[in-house]
Amino acid sequence: MAITEAFHLIAKPSGPICNLDCTYCFYTEKESLFKKGTSFKMNDEVLEQFILNYIHKQNTELIPFVWQGGEPLLLGIDYYKKVLALQEKHRGNKKIHNSIQTNGTLLNEDWAKFFKQHDFLVGLSMDGPDYIHDKYRVDRGQRTTFDKIYKGMKLLQKYDVPFNILVCITNESLKYGPEIYRFFVDEGVKYIQFTPIVERVSSEQSLYLGLKHGLPPKLNTIDEQTTVSEFTVDAESYGDFLIQLFDIWVSEHVGDIFVLNFEHALVSWLGLPAVSCLFSVECGRAAMIEHNGDVYSCDHFMYPDYKLGNILSDDLAIMLDSHQQKTFGTQKKSSLPKQCLQCEVRFACNGECPKHRFLTTEDGEPGLNYLCKGYRKYFNYIHKYMKVMVQLIENDLPVSDIKQVIKGPLIVQK
Ligand code: SF4
Ligand code: SF4
View 1: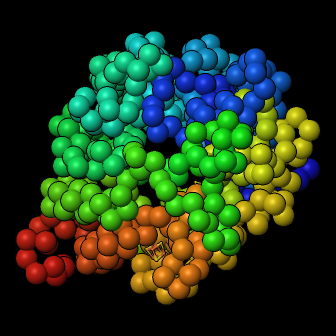
View 2: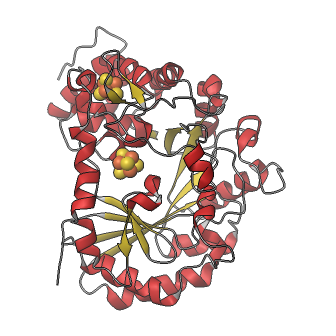
């Protein structure tokens, strides 16, 4: 039996179906890639094959299941009870952990108790206070959703369910960095992640597929199409946004509030492999399985060209080790333009996600990240603080001491 090194396979048990209609969503539009009348529910056969193979096709003891959508809560609690039963049936000696990403609108007491009882980590999508959140996170009738999601968050807190908040940053919300951050801190949130929205406007090819956003770039080819949607962040302003939040975090919250963007950056300064695929040297070990068993190179590359096979007919380990997937992974590094190769913060950035690499450098090379200006500014800004945090760790001192250290000349004293 083929077995491979550790990998992640994000599951979409309800496909791209969602009860919301967030303007910037990159996934709900994928409904157009399926036949009309498709039933978007991972059936029992696909579910069992997925669980069985995901557990046994990788040589690792802890198997992290990640359930996403669309909106995965649409399937109801009984569906996830079946998931738990199948995991128990097939886990052998391995340990299982479940995470689920939700828009929070369907959370109620039953879900909160269920998640607590079965140790799910919940990712809750919420963009800030109502005047920011409701700008783009609307339901199918274009009605606001903040109130429902806020109640959902309070239920997670009431039942002590571990959760993190995933905040999408748009060109609009960029203006409100401190307000967004302080809103969550004041609400008692401990784990926050900021994700910049970057989408190109549709092309002839994407419209032909029924998609409203542009397709991902081919990394070695100059792409003339660089127009982004109105909600896409301005690159440099995104860097300023991160810097603004970093300043608050580093002087007030290190060790108490975990801003995953900053925690992940520290990992790079420590010289360790990136935690987030975005900043890893290569891609290829974070694939995705759709409700019908189709496996794709990555959640962000759910397009016909990136399909690796189907769980019912193809070997999962062989799909992950295929030439197609290896090329997808290594291309991230091999296609970096000279500007990145010579960049002083490449160890932390690594060109970021290939989906965002549709710009051309000043030398005329393709494959530059749309967010480059922002990342370069941000990573250079945090460098002096990161160096101090590394020194603190190397001296067995708590990283949170940086809050004191920065009041002086940035020198660590043991
Ligand atoms: S393509 Fe982007 S989202 Fe996918 S694995 Fe690579 S960095 Fe991550
Ligand atoms: S900051 Fe810009 S130049 Fe540097 S590695 Fe990132 S994308 Fe490349």
